[in-house]
Image (cartoon, rainbow, N blue to C red):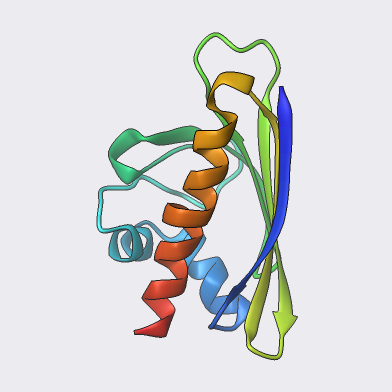
Length: 126
C-alpha cells in the first residue's frame, strides 16, 4: 500500500471548487459523465460512471472533504482528504490519498493528475 500527496492550483475560489466536488449536477458538468454525490457523511458516491466509488466520511464547507475510496478486497481503508486553501490564482487544492494498492498506484496517481484535477482545471479555465 502506498500514499499520494500533492497540491494543485484550480483557477476558482474555494467556495466554487467545493461546490464542484460536492454537488452532483456540477460533478456531471466537469467530468462529462454520470455521478452520484451528496454532501452528507455516511452516503456513498460514484464518479466517472462508476470508475470511482466510495463513501463520504466528512465535510467542512468550502474547506475540506474526506472520503473512503473502495478498492476490491482490500483490508485497509483507502482515504482521500481534499483540503481547499485560498491562493492568489484561486484555490490551492491539497490532495492526500492513503492506502492505495501497489498494483494500481501508478494508475491512480496518473488519474489524479491527468483526469480528476485536469478536468476540474479545464472546467474553470473555459
